[in-house]
Length: 130
Length: 122
Image (cartoon, rainbow over all chains, first blue to last red; front, side, top):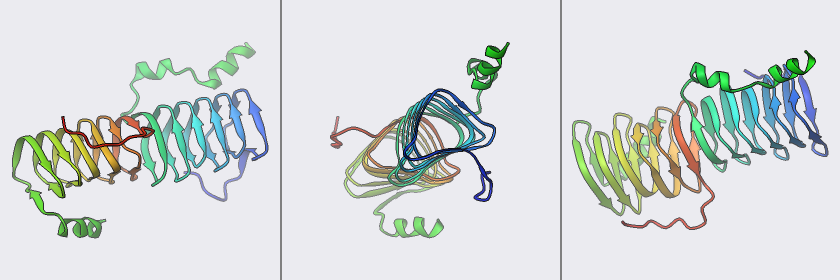
């Protein structure tokens, strides 16, 4: 689980914009806007943060906006200012009062076949290198 | 959490007990708590509480819903839906305000951006 003392690997500040796929093995905090897919160990979307794309992570905390699908192995949390437009696949879903979620929630563990369909960003990056 | 449930229980007019099984349609205006098994349809303009022991298979139209138990079916709530930590929900939820506690299981779609939430009787 993410702890406050764990350093951030990626920080997109509130006045920043990023276009493209972002891949990190650490914690990503998004206060600005991202257009593209995001894969990280843990994702925190601040109140001013916006993501247009799919998010893959162990845990996701949303206090901003996500337009895209979320796949989180452990936990997805939508805080009171959070807004998610898209499907959520997760083990644990928490929505605080005021949080908005439009989409489908899948909380069963992913079946093997489904797993294969999900091409992770990591795979795509390594394929390009080859 | 137990206290919350007790507080709600005190104000509830109708309780469907643990060992009661009902099939059919429930219509009411104030509040009902289901602790047993129910299959059918629920129309209400008030509060619906699903107890931890309850198993409900129904199409639900209500103002507020608090679930601690198992619900299968689509829910339309004009005010709020609360899924407590022990609850399991399979089916779609349409409501302007939703709270899901850690531990609750929700499989289905959630629709929140609907302008008119009017409780309609079919």
